[in-house]
Image (cartoon, rainbow over the protein chains, first blue to last red):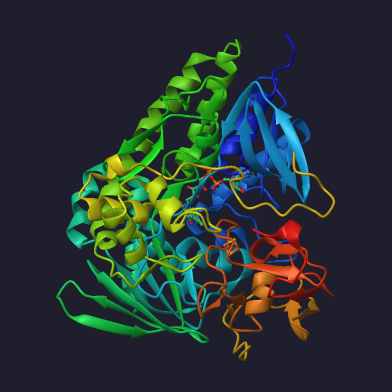
Amino acid sequence: MAEPRIIIVGAGPAGVRAAEALVAAGVRPVLLDEGQRDGGQIYRRQPEGFSRTPEQLYGTEAGRAIALHRSFERLKPQIDYRPRHLAWNVADGVVHTISEGKPGQFAYDALIIAAGATDRLLPVKGWQHAGVYSLGGAQIALKAQACAIGRKVVFLGTGPLLQLVALQYHKAGAEVVALLDTSPFPRQVMALPKLAARPGMLLKGLRIVGGLMASGMAIHRGVTPVEIHGEAEAGVTGVSVRLASGEIRRFDCDAVGLGYHLRPEAQLADLARCAFTFDARTRQFWPEIDADGRSSVPGIYLAGDGVRTQGADGAEISGALAACAALEDLGRSVPDAPRAALRAKARVMERFREGIAEAYPWPAGLAADLPDEAILCRCEGITVGELREAAKEKGADEVNRAKALTRVGMGRCQGRYCGHAGAEIVAAATGMPLEAVGRLRGQAPVKPLAIAAGEVQP
Amino acid sequence: MGSPGQARFLRLGETGRARIALVVDGETIEALEGDSLLVAILTARGRLRRSEFGPEARSGFCLMAACQDCWVWTADGHRLRACDTPARAGLSLVTEQPELSWPNRA
Ligand SMILES: Cc1cc2nc3c(=O)[nH]c(=O)nc-3n(C[C@H](O)[C@H](O)[C@H](O)COP(=O)(O)OP(=O)(O)OC[C@H]3O[C@@H](n4cnc5c(N)ncnc54)[C@H](O)[C@@H]3O)c2cc1C
Ligand code: FES
């Protein structure tokens, strides 16, 4: 039998462990990644010439980061690794790429998509100002470049990353003015039984909370964001929230890290025509998968945070499982015992993921309550009121129709940062359930392409 | 135009790297080898560019190649994504899209 052509998109924990399982079975996969280096988000590498130790960079996860980076170095000669390759479309068994302006095509027998996550955002009035960053962006400034996003920083939103990044900033010597969490404290306590599925992770989480308490920064839970204050030229000047007590309080700052946990980067799965399903707990659509990561489309496998936000350890497990599934479906024999162990671990990861989703709920009501004048689409300055009007007055009761009428979701970010809130706004304005207003369909290219002069688009 | 303002980002370490110079909108700025273009610009100024759709200055958002809020251009009209493009000595950039660069339009 000819060597099967297996392509992996994404060189994070999920993609690297998938590649490892394939190499162990004697297959040489193509590994495409848009980034300059391997590691993905959490184990993102700093540029050459930086000198911080893995402990400084990755904290408690230093050991796992080193292990993943070493595995990758060992694998490198045995795989066809293509850094700086954006996979921008999947159609008819071919992945279309672009690398430094040059188009490419990779045909596959099996495709493993491990594209990771991006921040899940919910707009707040004033979030278009310079100095407002996604939480992940705030972390990347620190991790990859040893910079703080400002001199006085407020972190606003919810999710595990909110507390982690606030503490990382504090430890690195940045001034963190306040940590403002929309999740009420009792929700976090109620989620403890599920979070206890991973006692080690729970303990790490509690240590982070301990570190934050000792840091002296202002910490408020159960807040309602009111406004990010700013000036056109100077950017952010402060943040106002309603505290759980009902008092409105303003915090002066010159930067805000904003985020509400993560959302899967599922556009490639969408272009490959994988079926999506609505998840009521997190209020979003995501691709259907079986326990091993098989999508609804034969030959397409989905792994890591790009399909379920399980975190880095879960990503490593799901990457390995997806590779095993691909090998099995291509007629290779896959040993049962290690797979059964991986599946058992995957179930623990899934229970913990549910716990996190319950501890830090997506505050859907905040999107529905945004004032008309707030900007929803930061790319093109489209307001919440414009979308509401299209939904109410022009019958745009489905998000793709609303997009066609208002351009919400059509800008540079292609709906990554406004899409979930936009759907909530349409649902609230029309009185329809969120699952009925649908989801923004993925469109090729998954990111705007800069084609080098003279090159022809494939 | 308005003044580009005081530096937005604050360096917290890794400052022993070699210094490099690049030109942004005709003004020479100093950066460090290994900086992204975004960091090079925002450790020298308060903004990266202006919004085409509103009055406000912009300074990127996601830093992970997802939002496209950080586009800048080379003098000959080549579009660069500042958050994932390394700064190189001698680069000359403009923060407003030059005319006649139709292949790089969004
Ligand atoms: C900004 C950010 C910060 C995070 N920080 C932490 C943290 O500190 N601690 C923690 O526990 N978890 C963190 N997470 C969660 C973390 O991402 C995951 O747990 C883990 O990295 C998931 O691994 P993965 O392999 O699924 O995806 P990732 O590690 O995200 O890797 C995905 C890879 O796919 C590539 N890619 C995506 N789309 C394409 C495409 N179309 N073409 C080519 N390549 C593509 C990306 O370049 C990336 O290298 C963070 C997530 C984000 C988004
Ligand atoms: S800051 Fe988002 S793409 Fe560069």
